[in-house]
Image: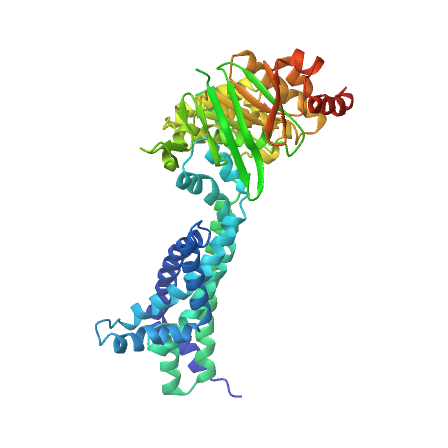
Length: 234
Length: 257
């Protein structure tokens, strides 16, 4: 194999991947933000005492986890305009982000649900016995404890999402991978270009991993604060 | 008017009827101990008082108000809005067998959380109240610790302070010493004893016969979902009238002394 180091370094140090990298990050954060909101809704529905809501959550989960995400992406971009007689015709970026968010929301539903059921029901009962309403007990007592279980796998999903955005090349969203495909289809330096593309993804995942560490530390048991001393001295 | 009025309460779990028409009145300032074998319904009755359990028939009033239910215009009981029940619960303290302190909050935050969230006390006022209460249960120096750093007895004393921070007019205790190592039982009972001496109305499910004998105004024996004996402790322990109370005491007392 001949490694064209000039093509490799030219591609690596060209500014052509800057905007696509930002696009990739933006799609990742937007899709994950939407997925987390969907996941909270889905988890609450899945744990609801109303059967209809539990069924709704089950249906959502079953469908969006069962259909390949690539199929969903193409559906939102290509099939939806046809289906609606062009009433809904989303730009590729929007269609792609929605598709990723809806798919991811199903996984986040499961992650958040497992976080919520990991909290001892007695914690909620103690909160209720103190006169907290259901939403208050959820927000102040159950959720903060559930977050410790929810955050690590969510970090994982973030990183997975960053890489899954590459599927949006199928609907020509200008993210990192599709930018790479444009380059190698012109210069045929498949290996060199894919190497550069991989480096970009590695750098971004390293970034997200560092961010995850910071957030996990933030939600670990907090260090002791000296309230008593502060009061007695102040 | 009694502070707690329980009238003909029935409670079923599926096909199992755990309360079979229980009636009981507790006057303000009284300390009532609920005794009986496990499965007799005493914990369920306690949990019905603040509506942690629904009831299937009868009614329960605290300070002349139904808890968890409202009467519609036909006089039928309907479950009331969560917000309203929560406000009533705020005035009924509860202490659990397994403490149930909030694991993610410090001791101080455990005690001040509900006063801030539910009673809308300012953070400063709630903190001051919490520190006062922690001093009362002898744990002011543990204010900044997390629950898992405390012994069981200390955790239970914090749980008592947490309940008192809501300024309840009634305290419910669900086997507060059953999960404790024997050497830690005394400190919790001492805290409860002082609370009783201050005039708090208390309903206590317990297996601590010495506490019932020395502190309670009334000892109540439950068996198979019914109250079978309700007497001042002197009479309850020396001359029980019901044969099942006699056999219960015969089984439990030698082991205790």
